[in-house]
Length: 156
Image (cartoon, rainbow, N blue to C red):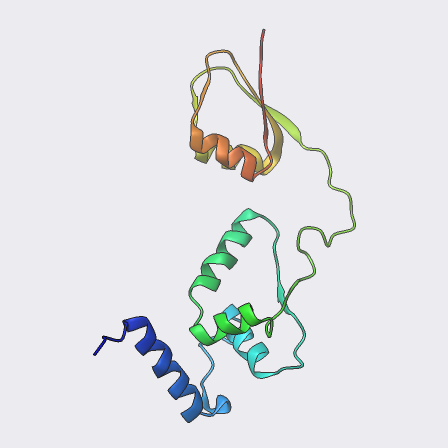
């Protein structure tokens, strides 16, 4: 007699609960505006519009990904099967029609540039000019790419 894996037991329990509990008796998560609640309602309504998601920057994308990792299994299955669709909300990157204005540059002549510094500099600048002896940490380089901050070494 072979043992049943814990993953298989969980799958069987989920299927059984889905059969026994009607969909309309499931209570929505706290806060009707939460991503999980919106996904739950989209799963319950087969004619629902795509779930609007606002993505203004990389931080919004990371928060959305973390939220998706915490949704219940039935919602994950709905996403993977295509029953739940996503769309960009008004105000997301790529939905604005106004051109972005060019920001200024920041200059650092000595020291070490950290990730926190890059995040702050990236809020108001689009270019960082660093001196010969300035060290940029690997995390700072990653953050610069994330906030679209160009790093230029001053050769003079």
